[in-house]
Image 1: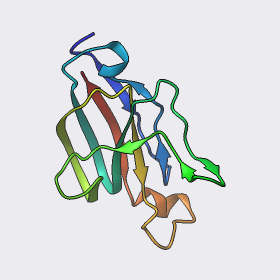
Image 2 (image 1 turned 90 degrees about the horizontal axis):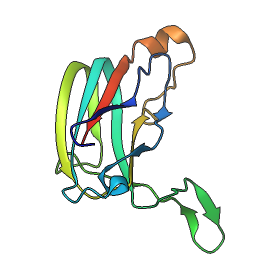
Image 3 (image 1 turned 30 degrees about the horizontal axis):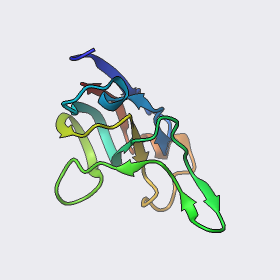
Image 4 (image 1 turned 45 degrees about the vertical axis):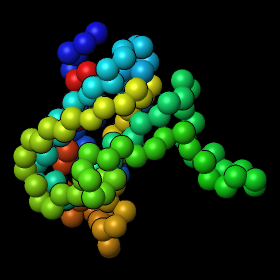
Amino acid sequence: MANTSIIMLGNTGGKFEVIGEPIRADGFYGFPDGKHTISIHLDNFTGKVWLEGTLASKPRDGDCTEQYGFTTDWFSIYLTPCTPYLQFEQETSSNGYVFEGNFVYLRVRLDRSYIQPVPDNHFDLATLGTIRKVLLNH
């Protein structure tokens, strides 16, 4: 299944925050090289984009236990050396990123939790732009 492009996240228009569905990655298929490429396509977008991975075959998200507190099987994948996310301000572009790892699943998360006040109408939300799509190739 090498060189297959998969839509990780479709158009986010009208949404403040989004967590994409888990997408099978190289580790799921047993591919030994672990090479992945994503492309992020933005339209006047303001927000943070997180790429997350897991080694779990059935990943859990957001369990809270008295002994361990909040736990999740997902972890951040650094696409730059400085932060575990990509931050954009009114960006219209298409950007590619290459990373390696034998992840079982990958997902993309749109985070605007730092934006205050939270838009309370569709017009204000529209000014934050959209992620048109995020594609994965492996």
